Image 1 (spheres, protein in one colour):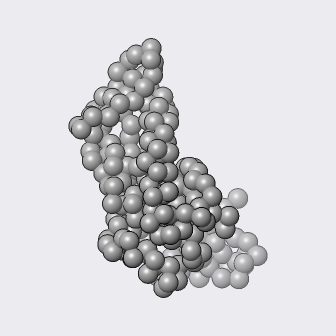
Image 2: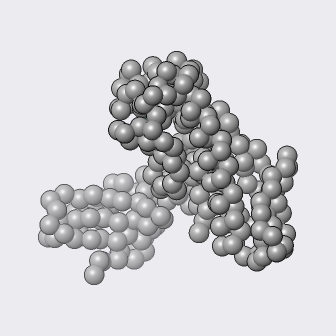
Image 3: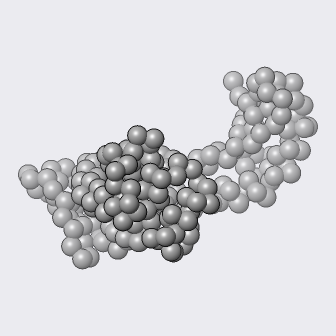
Length: 236
Ligand SMILES: [Zn+2]
């Protein structure tokens, strides 16, 4: 059983202490929770001092995570969602024929049941289809532009938690279809990034030079994705 350090005046947050065979203290702030991993015989004083030392950082990190959580996607009637970087208002309509249609300002979701789970499922299925069309075509185009089409094997889509894209040794490129919510230039950067891995399997200087050769503003797009990518994940 972990120790839970309940609110005390020194700490404006709770934290959990998990003891194990480890030799040093380490701190995690994840999903709004604070955890200290400590050696089995670490004194409470040592742990408290360690946490106290990082108090300001922990507080700002908790606030940042809370803010990000609020900014997360909600697929519901009247909410806003971006597609290719442009905001559209979701309109949920009851219909026996389930479908999703996008217009300049709206995203119509035709559904048999107007529940958050159902809307999200329909939205994801649609977004994945759009990604398969758009990102596959663009990947072939960009691989060709870089003279690397021979190394491209296939393009697959998965909703991975940690990465927007991935390139395997065998030339398979994988994308997270949620990227379709980003602006076109950002999606293009992501594709250029993965295609450049067909040549360099690392993030070396030569790799970034390849990226830059056809995407000169890459650092701006990379930054955008790091700052805004969390908005594409739903709260559920
Ligand atoms: Zn990479």
